[in-house]
Amino acid sequence: MLAATKNTFLSGVIASPESGVSLLAISACAEIIHQVASLKPNGFGNLYFAALGNVPPGAPFFPAAYHAGIEPAFTLALEAADLAVSAFTGAGSLEEARYNLIVVLEKLAGTLMSVAQTIERQSGVSFGGLDFTLAPFPEVASSQGTVMEKLGVPAVGLHGSLAAAAFLTDALDQANYPRAGFNGLMLPVLEDATLAARGAEGTLTVPNLPLYSAVCETGLDTVPLPGDTRPEEIASLLLDLAALDQRLEKPLTARLMPNPGKKAGELPDFDFPFFANSRVLDLHSRPLRGLLAGEEIFHLSRRDSSPSLPSG
Image (tube, rainbow, N blue to C red; front, side, top):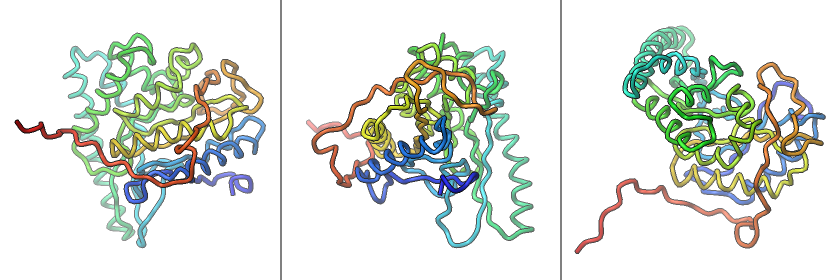
């Protein structure tokens, strides 16, 4: 389907609360990513495919969007990165920065809700909520990497980045509006000017991204990888992501972009106005062995955030 069409987005489910973590699905998605990379000379086809873990229906961002109901419905995807940049610029304290973002989100949500409810009444199509995910645009003014560095991180990828990602996501969590989809911090390497720059200089690495996903959302997005990356190496990364989304009960995705003929550290060949300049990142992965290389389905229970203390 991806080879035969130009505007089709597809996804594969590797984990969900109902079905658990599927090693077979992880292997299949890794193979798809590997095959799709060869559909075009620069591997651009993988922009249209993502592996999904714990992503509910109604998330309005492609390629994670799908509909599981019978009746039609709509949700709104709002790339709100610029709101965070403006809210944090000039803030005198962390509390002021958080307050500024919450205020602007709730104000804009009120306006959008009014429009959405009008559409709902006129069309009969139900409205499912807003996704104010902080999704960037490849300009510094709409960069989540810039926001994290405005908070005080010397360069995204260095220590302190995890705390900045958690702070941004926490501010979103505190805003009051009807929700759909992710509503978190999105860190797509090639779609964010500052993240792309930090990836090019080696500060931001592939292992950083699952780490930050533990406290924000989305997972691994538009990550440029070497062209000789094997499906088995991709599967190792997807398994880590599936374990995170199950244990933490959060939606995560992987949109990985092996660049044919390119090695780690080289410039990718993507000629796309919505991508910033970066370099191919080293995957830091090897094929799985033993039981984890099988075809089982296994479940991971959600971690209890407040375990009971032992008696006595």
